[in-house]
Amino acid sequence: MPIRNLVESQPTFALHPEQFHVLPSALGYRDYLLNAIRDAISRVYLVALYLEDDEAGRAVLTATYEAKQRNPKLDIIICVDWHRAQRGLIGSENQGMEKAAGNAAMYQAFAEKYEHAIPIYGVPVRNREIFGVLHLKGFVIDDTVIYSGASINNVYLHYLDRYRFDRYHVIQDAPLANSMVDFVQNQMLCHGAVTNLSQSPLPTTRELKPAIRAFRASLGQSSYRKVGVQTEGSHQGDILVTPLVGIGRRHNALNQRITDLLASSQKEIVLCTPYFNFPKVVLREVKRAIKRGVKVHIIVGDKTANDFYLAPDQPFKAIGGLPYLYEINLRKFAIANESHIATGGLSIHLWKHDHHSYHLKGLWVDQQTMLLTGNNVNPRAWVLDLENGLLIEDPKQRLLAKFTAEFENIYQHTQRMTSSGQLETLQDYPDKAQSLLKKVIRSRADRLLKRIL
Image 1 (cartoon, rainbow, N blue to C red):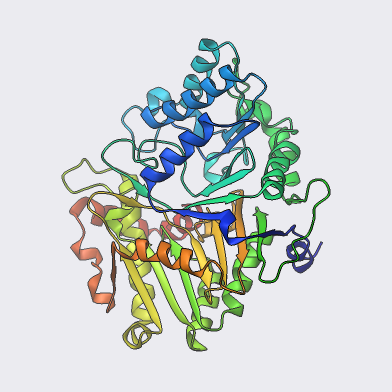
Image 2 (cartoon, rainbow, N blue to C red):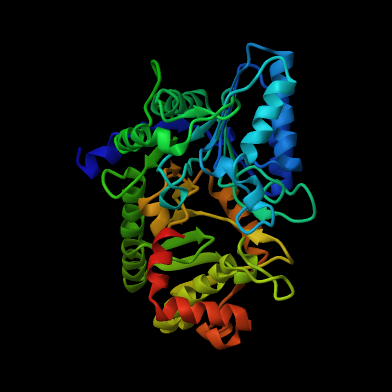
């Protein structure tokens, strides 16, 4: 099916403004999520990159298990990335010790502890994590969709003294919730590559290799759909929500819609990304938009707000070079667009708040079309990972006040760049970071890293 037809064939759901809510903080998101799980009546579907073995992860898992014990008929499904569930955090001291079991050991321990077990499925998008992961977003609790780019661990849920800032949206709509649950049931769980991590022993990735290959091919043809008979909204000024999914270069409706939104913009673009590393097509459309007079706002994390950043007083590891590599990308972009920064055609906003980190994604075009997504808008998201998003079309701007308030909340911890000179250069970086980056750039390994990280 041609890309254009694929995009147009996606299901669309009509909403009233009162069905859509924005949560302002990680703490508020955590409280809403835990309360929703505890009050669930019919179903709880959680899909995330990972559910970590830490205080926040155990709190969420405990809430789901307690809800299941109170109501054994409660339909609870949890999906996480297969590879990510079987290792520790990147760069953590105990990563090697946890590599064999990782978070899956916690899932199995919970299953043994309670009478009514909950399946936690490992979803393998590729044979190796570096070449693709489950990056779908969206929880469904009863008839409510809770959509955020956040995974489940201490920093995303602000469980201790640090938070990773994301976006948090709640949509109360049964048809949309049904569509997202249907995708999990009929596009993911029915495939032999998807395995319940709560049970042991687990198959090896090598044993699953043929199934994973078939699964990825199937995902490349997948899409959301309407479930059952739906009544189309006919009231004037409807807000339309379209769930989109994409993986790989071909037939990727999500990538195409991002490109189309940038290309069709007339007045303003607001683009959020935690890692400044645009795909070529996105960079091209951003440049074209600036040239035709569209005001472009890019909100990106300061390098110190990157989740891989290591403070100078911490032991340096190779992964700590990534924030500097992203800043080099951003500085090159700023230098190339210095005149547009000066005239206000391009605004680059750096987010930084104490020792917290930044993980915002999404696109807002002409204050009428919003894309909520976990897509980082980088080459990895564009080609390797399984991504999704919720496209919100609001031609009457009935959600304008809510989105304006959300971005005012985001902007309060940003600084607008006035020139590329505000960013450090390679010579300003700590010695170990300098040494690593010089080797990476000299060997041209940065080109490969930009494609997979």
